[in-house]
Length: 153
Length: 195
Image 1 (cartoon, rainbow over the protein chains, first blue to last red):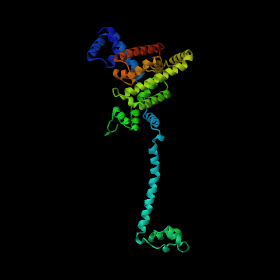
Image 2: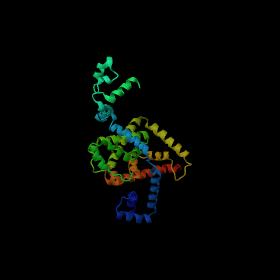
Image 3: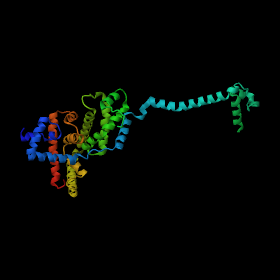
Image 4: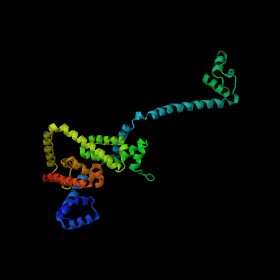
């Protein structure tokens, strides 16, 4: 290779883009050619000064960007059916839990005297019919508890 | 990545996204946003515009994931999209400013030289970052692009050729011309005693 050819390949030499054979030739040339050595040194310095400190992005900036862009890719409203289902289960689950708790409460407490007459309730007298109507299955301790609740004990 | 975590390649993530796991696109952005932002900033020189361009590039790449052929990496592909977006924006900006170009150049030159004069006290081995921007801005955008791909992103010639969609020989020639132009721009400031 001639000097001009070598000079043209200095960039590729520095970038590690030459074949082993070409690398050997350029290395040997650099050892004897002052001009090429100067060109190579000056580019190394330019590269350090101009490009070394460029392009730092913090982790937080990246995360903000990702969140912002993901909102455009999967907008919260377009989660659609998923969002509706979430809302449904959020309300339904506590309601079901409460229902089961109430059922368990009355079933267990009333087990000993399941069919107690409504006249054991405080709601006797004029409200007997109502008591029979609304509390047909409340009995025993359950009824006592209900009485004490009404009495404010 | 923590111990015990399994590394998933970009190509695998792309395949999973194509199968419907869109949320995984966040991981691709996490991996490549810093580089893409840096590329856009180098070309547009405005952080806010660079951020917008990076976002547009990621959105466009997400929407065209089906067109992504795996003969190149996702990284070079997204670089190509981002670079094209930036070049479009620069052309648009240039057209907008066409009428007042002479005035703009005058102002910019005067401003640069005032800055050069005021930064004479800087140590000779260091360059103030604004001045780096000035030197870079003296270069045509095609040169800036190829220099950033090589010097900042560390791409090899093969990857650069994929981003720029040109041959390896063309990459070598363009890079050589860009380096020469960069050396010239630096000499211009050197003469002012700044570097």
